[in-house]
Amino acid sequence: MTIGFSNEPLLRSKQHDLDLQDLRGAWHFRHSVLGYAFSSIYTRVDQVFALWGGLAVFMFASAQVSHASWQQLAIAWSGLTVVAVVGMVSIVRFWARVERLMWLVYSWATLMLVGTVITNWGVFGYVGPILINLCPLWLGLCAIGHGLTGWGIRSRTFLGLTVVHGVAAFTVTQLGTWQYGVTGAIIGGSLLLLTQLQWDMRPPIDYAVLTNEQRSFNHHQRKLRQTS
Image 1: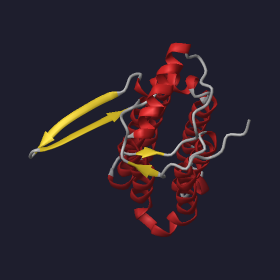
Image 2: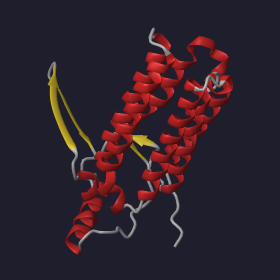
Image 3: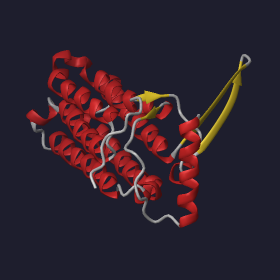
């Protein structure tokens, strides 16, 4: 059966009546500032977005302003990337298994590791064409990843991010020395934005690994979302 795109808004405020796979391991925050109550929920997917978003901002900001050598930066980036890849797979494993999207998680892991290998090749091998195109490289890899995500979950939001990152990959070098900061803002900023909002996703599927009771819970949650 072909699963099409939903008619949900691309981005909107988060709903709290989530399915079991989204609630598992979610963080709930409730704050009050100057009399204004703020409440939000961060699913495992949100947590991974925050992890990679913060890491991207840090890495490209350090490339923009740090006085460390490229070799030192590459070593630090490689270590952080490997830790983030392992963390990503661990954090979203249950959600991805339920949604039948482990292939997508492994695709992102592969893209990040390929980017790390190519970056290190350029830095330690003094390969000029790679060094002057590090920003297009990572923007391009993220464009591929967002494209796979958009297709895998049938999300127009992520397909839009594919276009944004793809266009940036072809134009960012025109910014000269500012390209690292802008790249970090695009890659990291888009992920951090997604942690705060709810994005569109395909209609519910016949979820894997859930019991009948858990599927009934998800069905009840969907009814609550439709009436809220």
